[in-house]
Amino acid sequence: MKNIVALVAATALAAHGSSAHYIFQALAKGTAKGVPYEYVRRNTNYNSPVTDLSSPDLRCNVGGAHGGNTSTLDLGAGDPFTFTLDTAVYHQGPVSLYMSKAPAAAADYDGSGDWFKINDWAPVFNGGQATWTLKDTYSYTIPRCIPSGEYLLRIQSLAIHNPGATPQWYVGCGQVRVVGGSGSGSPRPTVKIPGAFKATDPGYTANIYNNFHSYTVPGPSVFTC
Ligand SMILES: [Cu+2]
Image (cartoon, rainbow, N blue to C red; front, side, top):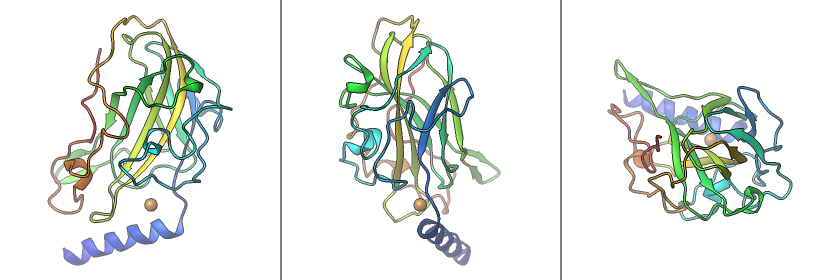
């Protein structure tokens, strides 16, 4: 068993050094794949992860603090949307969706306000095996009850494939204008980013190769209408 664990770890390290990582590049309405960087802020760190839990880059990736050349996508409350990557996510770990309402235009917002979570793709445990949702597209819907307005719509892959090493965050932010929202209140619970994720979070320190039978995705609980 030890040898299998060592082999898995070595394979993960090899993959890490030799092949491309992945970038959340596109956002579109429905299940379309979208155009890279039309509605997703362009990052400047190629496909490298963010690893510093105290960095503002955790919000929208390196280079994603503002949306100068990024358009804002109109979505109705309740509409489906899809994020597409250049390469499918292949590091094990949860994928999560967050939103944060901009004070005015999404393009001008740095994401320093309140964030709420709208979905987790957590592992499914079956017969002692964990299955992660590792894909090149992630589709979900805008909650019907949130206030109309402009938001950052953030997707995150937390890579915990290499226990003992620093986990990696692959993140991207789309800019959306939500119309027809029925909610006038503020979705809860909210967190700040950075700040939402701690080095002591069980979902951050988990060893997915050793006695892995349950998992708690880092961050706040998922907001539902
Ligand atoms: Cu990697």
